[in-house]
Image (cartoon, one colour):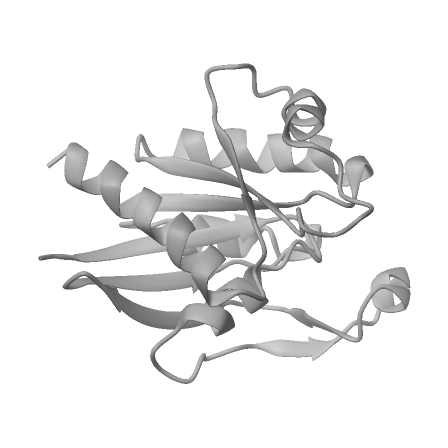
Length: 173
């Protein structure tokens, strides 16, 4: 039974805040502000610093730190990755043009630290979602990286992602 810092990162509108809100045992600390760029047609608010939540699964406590998705707040990734023990990269599987940016984020986090990570295709339940192999091709991750589907609105789906992360963390202890 341990406690772990896990960073939830990904592109703009990939579902990071919702992912944390869906599973957190405590009220989520968010830093959402009105979108002032052309992205305001996509959603009204965006994370500008971080999201924070906490969940206990099978006796382990996971502290979830969500990064902003807009590139102008990239500096927060550098701050939030400090002392992380794992990270999750959320990809909006309905938005193929965002896949190359997700690839950049993955490479950036791999450069920060050699820790376990998961690539998660969020919104995979939606009719316009592409299949996992298309997400893999679009992010140029190769066959060695497993991408798992998720619906950040469903607690059971988010819980399954976190169970996978815990398995990876326990395997390296």
